[in-house]
Image (cartoon, rainbow, N blue to C red):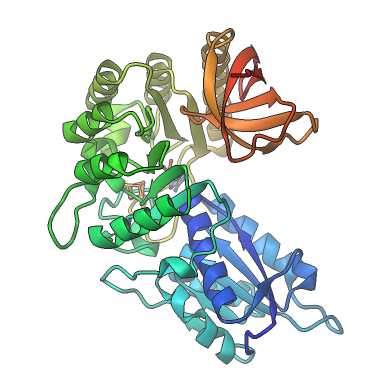
Length: 439
Ligand code: 5AD
Ligand code: SF4
């Protein structure tokens, strides 16, 4: 199919990395003459950009594909699947959803116009990997927000945590040349972007492939560029979170006092089985250093419950770590075996009911912690970046603070895209409430 004047609909599942990939896909399709459709029903091409990290995300893909599949007598539509799944499970995808017209892995998005031109017969599979970084020209990134920009700095992972599919879907680490990052930052600064989010599976291990410049130096340099108010980065690995990164963060107020640092488990023995490369004590020491050097810093994390062999005592270690660390936010998951991973070769021996109960315990404890953290903020005034109207009340707007907490507040005008001051008047476990402060 030729893309000129065709309507495409893009559905994205997964993390910010996938959202950023979708911004590229949309940009590449638009540059080839296609336009975005409001709904899948109106599109000539439907692309699902997926995540394969957990079993649940993959089930979402299959369910969604079932919904958008072409019906006999319905309008002709090309169906494509993009993202990690393409790399990991092409065979299963073809067996379960044979009507998929094309499958395209993360290193092949620039080739989409040509792939779509060939699609319509047998499924076209473009799952080649490249060892080198593939640069997407800034003009081909169709950014969703005029305020917050995602900037990819590395891709892939060399860590092989035993539960994780990412090294098999995104391949080995590859780093984006610093000069390309610099050029993108300069363009974003000139266009008035206020918030930057550096992205990569393990951003701390970043090194400029040309000069060896480390991540801490990239952060410090970005922090000195004009225009940006907040700079964040995602995801960090505790074992690579070195002191020079902490120092860069202390030296520059634009670098948000906020770090997402996946703990996964609070038990040293589980961490060893997971091949995480740090102990409970090492993690606690890093967190303590961050808290000491950057007062007021917020930490958030990922937790897996029910990893193979996890005993009740090991699980209790995770609960006690959560109590000690008091994260601003956590993402918690039941372990699910993923194809090709080391953990999937052994038994998935924690019963489902036990996993479910442990997940509920983790979430109940975290809910208490967050409620208390949020309550302690009532009465304070904080800077909030407005996002848009809240879902329930058109007079209430939603935004995020430096710690990335959700703040819902009353404001006479729509504060979307602006930094405003908000007085906090109330708090629940998942958000803060407040009123705009006139200044
Ligand atoms: N089962 C459950 N959770 C997983 N994650 C990664 N792989 C699995 C798995 N097999 C979680 C980790 C990771 C997050 C992105 O997803 O917590 O940090
Ligand atoms: Fe997966 Fe571990 Fe790499 Fe994170 S560090 S992407 S959990 S293998």
